[in-house]
Length: 367
Ligand code: ACO
Image (cartoon, rainbow, N blue to C red; front, top):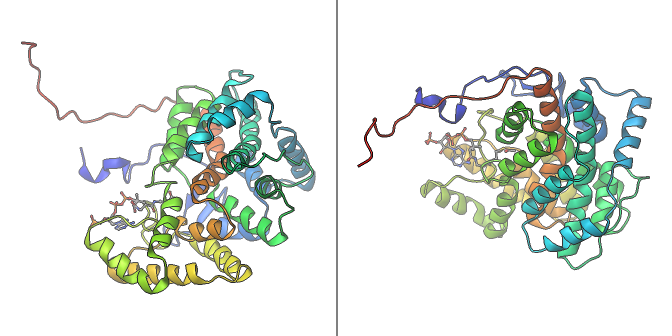
């Protein structure tokens, strides 16, 4: 085995039409469109439609899609409330994984083709924000707020969390973060979803498995660790010394580095813009001052750039969320990308079954 390909580094396992990183410019494209442009010109719902259908929606297609998503937002019935309450003490990532798994089992029908998979996907897309916000409120001893079908995806989510009409700026910023997290090729969670889908298992199982993969700090869990680290640093003047100490101890610093990008993660400038805007709105520039010091010190010491999770930490924190909700937000958004890949895998499937090089005992007899 080529040791450089450990962790499947550099190995192409299949073809995809969903997204690409242009090697020369590090630009991330969804279905050919630069994400940096989509963030400025589209809503999250339009981007989900693009990922699933391959083209941006016309206004009537968008209206139909929004209507469909809103209709699928779950009502918190006795069963769901019971489950939510029994998960009150759980980490929000464990809660969302369990709730999505339950949602897949409820009213279960085997999904056999693209149309059936899309029907399932929209059910999970619509359900995730309801589950995440209800869990957040229950663990904070607050009553869950039912979804409001007059509101867009992000507007509704913020209202369900904070029980007040969110400002236009908050909705816009949250929606942009959803677009930025929606899709990123054959990363660990998406690959997990494709592996599960390749056995012709169902969409619910594939998304549940993907959530498990996303939870790890080397992947989606990094956005939570970033904010925990920043809170531990406390103030910008301590950032450089903190980072130097971590590097001396050979620690991985959360929010830096990426398998695909050796220089800039192309989602970072858009996420940074959101963080700066929020810092201004909230009159709190401390976290972004600390951010700048972390970025320049890491560049100087290791020539490693930040990934999207570094600016995402301050964005969600400044919006007023609990830190352990950050990765569940990633789930809400990435359901879009996972579903696109589950659908694509189903349309041209071969079971994913790699080999390993055996390095254990040679053949021996049982004594
Ligand atoms: N802090 C310190 N050093 C780092 C970091 C980091 N965050 N990332 C990479 N390096 C160093 C490694 O120590 C290694 O150095 P060496 O060659 O001297 O041993 C070199 O850069 C290559 O790093 P690898 O870990 O081999 O890179 P790999 O592609 O396997 O891992 C990963 C990528 C997991 C993202 C890694 O950079 C990391 O652990 N980052 C921190 C966690 C994180 O932020 N994850 C979020 C990823 S983006 C996302 O999921 C949205």
